[in-house]
Length: 374
Image (cartoon, rainbow, N blue to C red; front, side, top):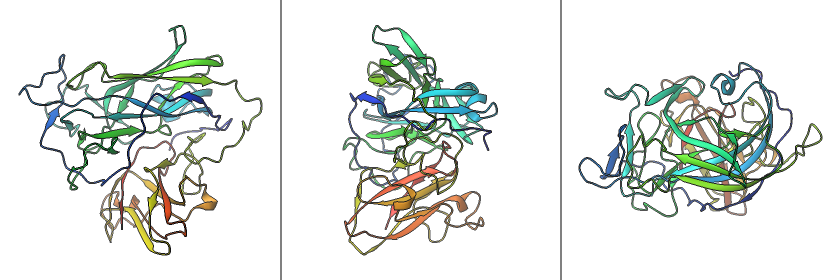
């Protein structure tokens, strides 16, 4: 457990100038690598593959900015990993999507595979899985171009989150890239959510005003791409004055990052919306799960994910949920860690529409929930 994180203020909305495209509805969460794939190249300095074949192309997308006031304990993961310092801090949080819009898969494979450069991957002790080192870099600039804030150089577990902007519609449904076999299919994107540890720029000492947030990926060309001139993106953000009171104005949005190390199904922060709303037949029973290894098996999970089902088209607070689940087969009957996967059954509401939320048991923790719907 991370140590002594305390919420001082709740979240304050940010005014943004969105210059990033929206993402498409996720399709099947089980998909194999396509025939065209490009492996890592630690010495890549140009866009040519060794066999002259197609290459991936990564481009960052910033979404869902949020300002958070939070106090960190000296033993918290984010302090020990160098993302911030102990004490009361102000954070500019955001989601970062990295779509692969190229013609080939980005394929990294198992981080522990023999022959890797020794510094290519790092094991995140707080997240309990491997990250590609230094994948993303975040910086904040004033409108004159001066740098006023910098994020921790972020390492990623690269995996398939969902299909991007209608691309790769013919991808077969059999297997996916994940933290143990890393990569991004051509036409899919990886999502690093704003509620995860270290996914922010510390703006404690930044004055209120208008700024430009920059995200760069693959700046050191650790992986070969067909082009590199689209590896950075800017978003204009307006930072408001700090709230005068300790509450800051409570927002009914469970997808906002938590103020501390909140845990469990009952929390109303740190959840992630899984695509756009789904449709169902009113009154019918619907099952959503990511619990391979349990009985019956449905979907795939890693880590300790939870599920919440909301009626209608929006994320909901706990009091309005249709159903929720943490551990679908407690007791370890599915083997190591599989008892932590989630599975929930509910009755389709009269509107015929519902929204799926997922989240880690510990807010900010890493997890995978590749759910299936029946």
